[in-house]
Image 1 (cartoon, rainbow, N blue to C red):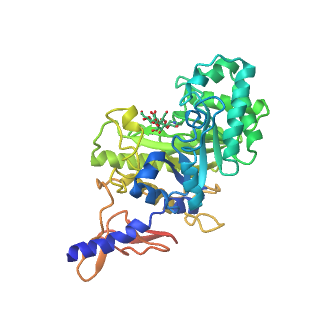
Image 2: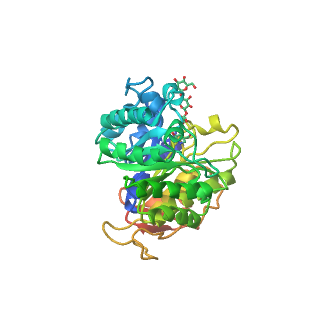
Image 3: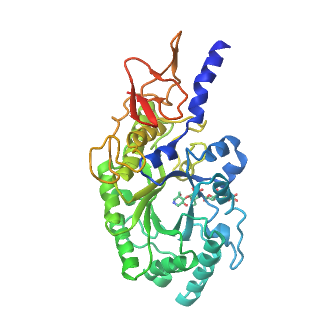
Length: 419
Ligand code: G3I
């Protein structure tokens, strides 16, 4: 009974100090967010409560609801029942909304996919769709993924009704239509496997240049970040790749991160590798001045597209399927906390002169802990936090002492950590 009471007292503050978005903003990013599944958020209270935690997730994106097959399943018949679910949650909570996705070869209704089009007829269909959908969400979307996944992994243009009809002219056309429909949202090209800086990345650079050369508006490139544990590029390699795009004058963001284990169940050491991979991805965004934010594609392993698409793999997210934080959560929060800046000023522990540069990288996690362990209670002295655990900071109500040999080190006003 007493043990239960002590544990509850110790664990309760941990549950209410979720703070990834807050830490990301303090580190100079615009947001830390997640994709939200329309069914899960309606049916699972634990899931919904975490989604509602704005300090943890300051930005949401609908996982499926805004796609073409959901919004215009039949020509000219628009339906926003599913599409409105996540935007309504974001509105209620005051969270930023990324909107996804307008022109994409997948989740395209049969009438578009198998229609017989020429430039005139398909342009009219695109115009009606973009005007209607962007019009419905006008003013609500911080970003819109205008074109999604137009490039094959081998660096060739992907066939689709759009490419097959217009060739590369559909790029500028889509961005122009989007700008006309909602001039105040940021317009993104979004794709996966850009992180490896190979032929596909070269082609995405070409796509941005084509849009710009046509005089059409493009604001950003989304790196989806569907990656694999142990095969994720290094922080500096990722930053180099991001800079290929910011040097073109567009911003970048990670828009759909998940880092899957090649086989599951994962081992404790694989979860540590995953934590370091997540830290490298987030760190690369901190290192690049034009990288504005981080979105994870879901947050709990309970709901993820990964095992369905890549059977035998998974556990790709930062909370396990019981909603416990994984080492990846700890590595991200530690990294963000270590990069915090005082409001309007320079990083507290400045090593470089960039406006938002890598400041301090916590040493890679080498322990084999699965979930940050509950603090240990020492009779008479109060609870002790384990290595890597939070032990102080503005608003922190948890343990302030560290398990030997670690000491509580003040990283910034918001975060002290047992190191
Ligand atoms: O809604 C129907 C339901 O009515 C039906 O009974 C059921 C039977 O299969 O299917 C349901 O639709 C599924 C939908 O997710 C909603 O759950 C589709 O089959 C399924 O294919 C679809 O998968 C989504 C996938 O995109 C489709 O391409 C995933 O949830 C979603 O996470 C995934 O997200 C994509 C991004 O949009 C773009 N980048 C890659 C990313 C991962 O694939």
